Image (cartoon, rainbow over all chains, first blue to last red; front, top):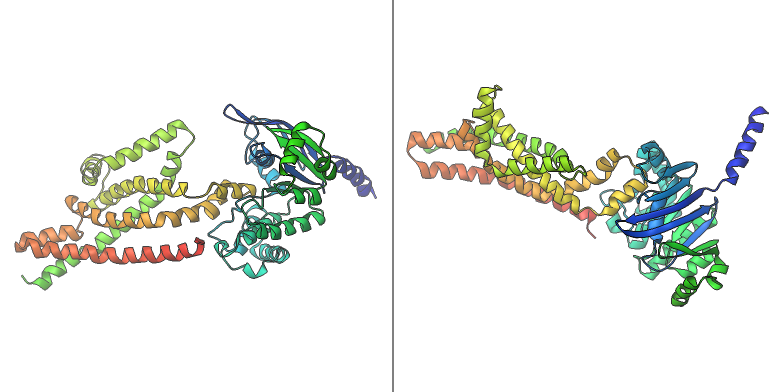
Length: 264
Length: 215
C-alpha cells in the first residue's frame, strides 16, 4: 500500500534520531559559568543517571533541557523541537518541548490549594485539552499505579513527603511525556520514604520510560540506569555504561568523586 | 427631638457607607493586580511608572484626593456626583495599597510553584488563573480584610464632599440637636458593628483555607 511504503522510511529515519540532543550547552549566571559546553545525546528507552559533587551543574543541566533555565549558548533538540540559545524561543516551540518532558522536583512542588486529584488533572485539561472526565480517569489510573488512589480527594498537605513525590510523578506522567526528568527526587525525603519513590521510578524504568535522574543514590544509579554520567565543574568528566563508570572510571576527577561517595 | 428619630437619621447613612466601601474595594482589588504586575515588571520604565503612581496615591491624604476629583476634575472636566467621586478616589487609593499587599503575598509563594506550572506547560494565563492567583488571594486575605476595615472608616471622608453616609448623617443630626457626644458615639458604634462581621468572615475564611494547606 502506498501509505505504508511512505510511512516506513519516515519511521526508520525517526528511529535513527536521538530523542534528546544537547549541543555545546553553556549556562552562565552573570560571570559564573555553571555549564561549560555540555554535549549529550539520548535514545528513546534509555535511563541516564547524572551524578557528581554539588555545584557541578547537574540540576542546571536538567533545567536547561526543559528551558526552566534558558541556556546561555548552545542548542537543545527534543522530540523534533529545536531551541537555540540566545533569543527567547517561539511560545509554540517552548510549549511543545515542555509537553514532551515531565519533571519531578526535589521539593515536589505540588499545588497546595488543589486536591491530589486536581493536581494530576489540571495540566491535562489546560495543556492537553482533555475533558474533566477523561483527565480524572487518567489521573485515577496513575494514582493507582503509584499506590495512592485513596488520597485522591485529600490536599497535598495531608500526605507524607514520599506520597507527595509519588503524586508529583503521577502528575508529570499524566501528560504522557516522552522523557522524564528527576531532579534529586529523594533528597528531601528520609531514607524510608525515599525508597517508596525509588520503587516507583524503578518500575517506570522497567516499563521502558526514557529517564534522566540526577541523584545521590549511588546504588540506584548503578542498578537502574543503563548509562551514568559524572559531572564536575560544569563539564561531563565521565560517561558510559553504568557498571563500567561506577566500577572502573577512567578520569581522575571521576575516581576521586566515586571514592568519596563509595560507601553510600 | 428624641433619641429614636436621631438614631434613625444616622442609620439612613449605613447603606451608602457599605456600598461605597464595597465599590471602592472592588475597584482597588481589581486595579491592584495590573498595578502590582507593573510594579514587578522587568521593564524599568513600566516599573518606575507603577512605583511613582503607588507613591503619589498613597502619599496624598484621601480627603485631598476626594477634593481633587470632586472639585477639580468633577467640576472642570467631567460631570461627577459626590458618590462617584468618592468611589473613584477611594478605589484608586485602594488599588495602590492592594498592589503592595499582592506584592508581599507573591513573595510568599514558593518559586517552585511557577516552575511546576511551567514544566507542566501551562500557558502564562493558566499559570495565573489556576496556580498563582488562588494562592495569591489566600495569602492576601488577612491583610486585605484589615485594609477593608480601614477603608470602611476612611469612607467617612466622603461626607466632606456631601455623600450622605454615616458620618454625614451624624454631622447633620448633631447640628440640629446640639448633642455632639451621643450622636457621634452612636455613629462610632455603627462603624464597629459593621467592622465586626467583616473581621469574623475574613478570619473564618482564612482559617478554613489555611487548614487545607498547613501541615
